[in-house]
Length: 154
Image (cartoon, rainbow, N blue to C red; front, side, top):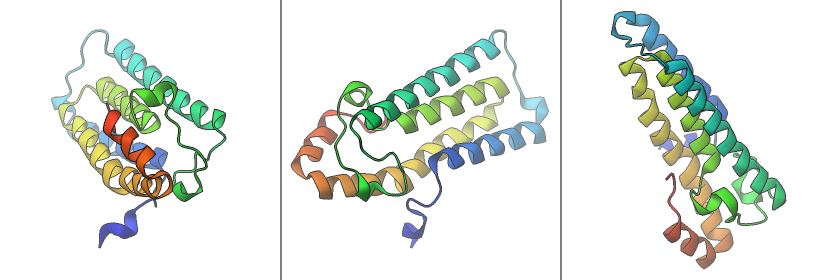
């Protein structure tokens, strides 16, 4: 039934939609915001870490000369398991999550944080699982071993 959503919305668009929802929530109930000293530095640090993490994943794909297109996992030509992929199977998506976390810190609004698990659940179900089905089909036991030894997120 929900399979029609698989691999349809670009991950960056999902992140931007979550950011917009977080902003809307914060604007609708500004009295719940809890700004704290150093929040901008913390938010920038988290967002920068997320960007670096995502870029490291992207660079590893480029080095392996495989596709980074999230809508065409079947086009993958190599299994990337080096560098940041030793720590997480999805550094690009984890990077987007870290940027969202930075945005949540900047907003300092507890209800805005609800978008974080929604992002994870959406990405897990509609982006990562379909990608992993393709990787399993293409790389078989090698992917199964990799998936056993490296966590999906962290």
